[in-house]
Image 1: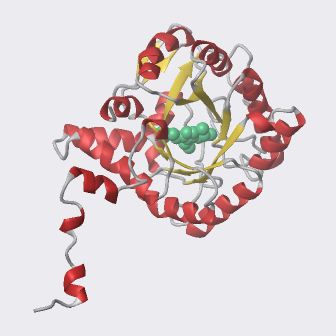
Image 2: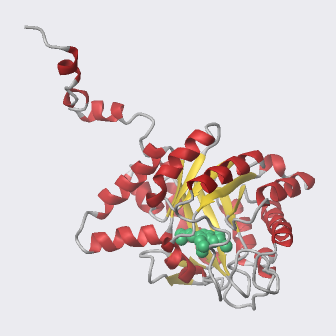
Image 3: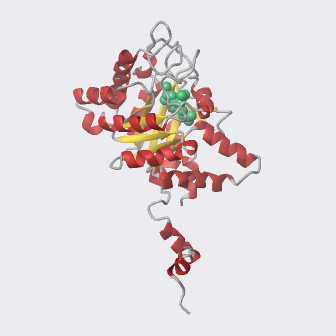
Length: 333
Ligand SMILES: NCc1[nH]cc(CCC(=O)O)c1CC(=O)O
Ligand SMILES: [Zn+2]
Ligand SMILES: [Zn+2]
């Protein structure tokens, strides 16, 4: 008795009954070490090694501690990091002068990492919020609203300083209009455009998941919020326009941030920018949430961390910024 086609097609188990056939079903969506970029907080006390209460296992590092901390990770296959500066000593001002202080933690760390780890890809977050007295990501008018033109000029200046110090990649996370173009033009003018990746935080949403990060880097705005520059969570249209705009302005890599509540946007970005690597940032609140759930016995930490990372790759991401990077270097062995 012959079966109908639909009866024959309805058997799915036969395609993933063995670890090898399961791997075939995941082809192109398997996690690899090189997909992970590790965010590092670098502070201005050169000998610091300070635990961050809301981010289990993560620390604020002084430059003198970086080499010993990273050497075993590089040994295990760490290929890229992204640096965030955390100035705690010197006074901050309205234009974020400390951002490109030649003696500041980021520039010192770039130099050190390039020297200590010749193969390591060094990216730098570019923003002003960690360095401004008001804690906003740009320069403000007197009424407290964003003054976009001087903001993007200042961000371009900062990006150029990082590139000159040896950063392989500059990653503007500020969400000012036109900053990708401003940075690209500034890099071109300095002859750095060909050797500096521009990774744009393109679809970056005004999320409640940034809290632990703001504690870690002391960058919570002193008044107001970031809703006039970070995207509204429901704004699919703005996210699409931001991705297309940043591609048009010369971004080399597009990013979506956060990840889990925005996986549909990751897929949208994949379709809108099919020729670009697509990054996504599993942010501090997601990291803390996964830890908290594991601690509460909801799931196993590793299984959940892997499941979330896989969801990002399945959605279309090719690069994952994650505080779980050191764990993945062990887990992916
Ligand atoms: N320039 C802002 C910035 N750069 C990195 C993060 C978040 C990263 C994280 O939560 O892990 C944020 C968000 C914010 O404070 O608005
Ligand atoms: Zn910022
Ligand atoms: Zn930032």
